[in-house]
Image 1 (spheres, rainbow, N blue to C red):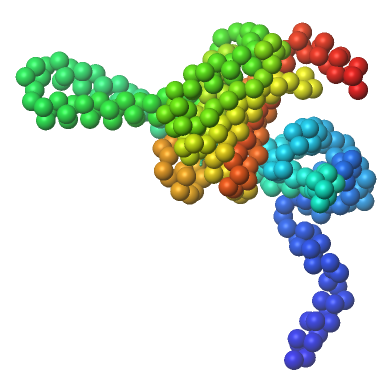
Image 2: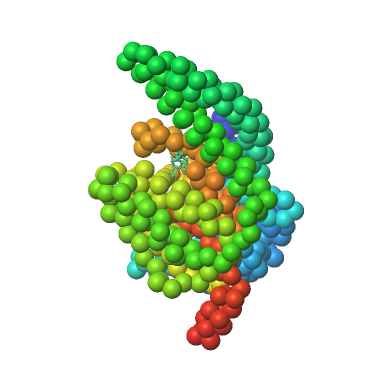
Length: 369
Ligand code: ADP
């Protein structure tokens, strides 16, 4: 009784007045709150540590002065005017990786009144992912040779069994299908290495808008089979980016393929291309199952698949989004996701417009401000 009373007394003496503030102060994630003008109004100790500032020094600063990249993300989220949080990777000096979630605060009338930024340290996850990926990449390399040998032996067997019966033919066909599938999987794993490697072909000025439009055309058959309405929107004549065209096609098709794969029949998939602040931006939205906030922070990891019915029903390797991220980062770009369970998902990426195309556009944008 006496001990209980003294605990209560000491809690009353030292405990924070506001329980919500106590929770935010004690979590390991960095939490930063801003006003509508994106100036910091509150942050927790982890937030101050992430930016190497004291809380007092950070308060009142524009988000972009805590970190320029974070400021740009908030600007982008504001112009997208989405209801759902935006999730993206953020690297802070000296060398720390974070998974960032940016959520708008809204007044009852729907006006943005501020922002909440939550940064989750993903450095340990990143290191674990790298170790796992290196082990798998090494094994994949070693698997290539025996698979090639088996393919060769199977062709010989096929040729020499002239009078094979239907059962034998069926066996050979199954072996061939299995080996083809294994080969496909290895190609996917190895293409991550390739995408992360040094640029192969010289980069050329290409239109990301035209690439996205073309990918949508190629996916039309798949969408019709699933009775999904697939739409493209974007200007006829857009700016150009310096890129390796086949890699960009790959990035866009991985996103569109996923949207079609995970969206149930009679749903809707929209691909939008636009340009802003010297960036070529491609976004793929779907009316599918959406993704939980916890899973959103891990989607671009290699081999990560969301636990749950929608993913279990759909075959995949967990490599598609990792390939997209690798390709886009190779083009000095960024990827993001915005999603709410039961309300669909939007995956997007932005890469810099080629300077010749970007310069007049930026000038025009500045003049119009
Ligand atoms: P894969 O589709 O081969 O599993 P990805 O890396 O492309 O691998 O995607 C990783 C995971 O993210 C998927 O397994 C799925 O759980 C989830 N996902 C990707 N795109 C969507 C989407 N449009 N809607 C819902 N979930 C998605």
